[in-house]
Image 1 (cartoon, rainbow, N blue to C red):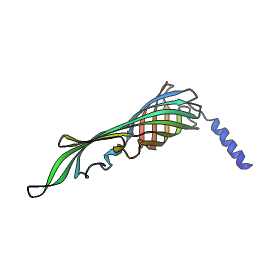
Image 2 (cartoon, one colour):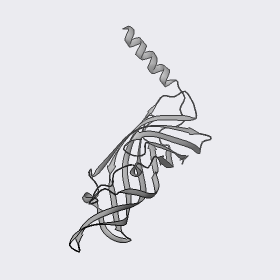
Image 3 (spheres, rainbow, N blue to C red):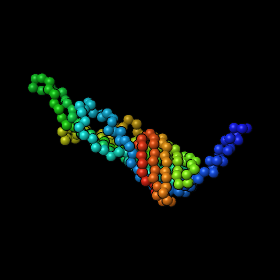
Image 4 (spheres, rainbow, N blue to C red):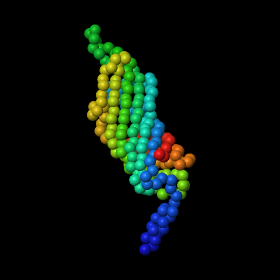
Amino acid sequence: MRIFKILLGLVISFNSFSQTLFVGNQMIETYVGFPNVTKYLPMLALSQEPDSITNYVGIPPSGLRYTYMLTDDISFGVDVIFDRSRKDFVSTDTVFQNGGWEYLSYEGQRIQTRLRLQFRMNFHLPISQPNADSYIGLGFGTNNRWLKDYKNGKLEQRLSGADAILIPFSLRVCYGYRYYFNYKLGVVGEIGIGGPLLSFGLSCRL
């Protein structure tokens, strides 16, 4: 009985907390994530690992998200996550010519593009700050990747679909926090896996 009274007190306490989002609210958010993990991953599907990476440029996992409040505590949405990277590298081929083995170095380049479309369900947590929103998000969706490999400026290999990705779907689990400066405009941040590890962006309530 004592435990029941404690739980009942917690529920009443939580329900007395303020909140900034209610059923029917809609949000559009744009964000940038960190880090771009493709910089640190091995270059899979190459005939061999490169001798050295000479240059790297990329667009970190960034996206656009739409969220609709189904109830005061649960929201549903769609999240589009995009990233792109280019690695320049030097590698060495071993070839047999002129009666012997020779080592020929070449300049290579790999361009990778990734696009994920995820459907999201968010569970909003009680919070005492009237301008803030705290939630746990679960996402499930597609996982698409396109690879292009160049050798001395010439396209050598192009991969897409099942040839370019190990798992054809994507999952995301995250914790998010929003803070609104006024009714319309605020900031949003997330930490999670199955997408950007950390992300920060703008939130606009429609």
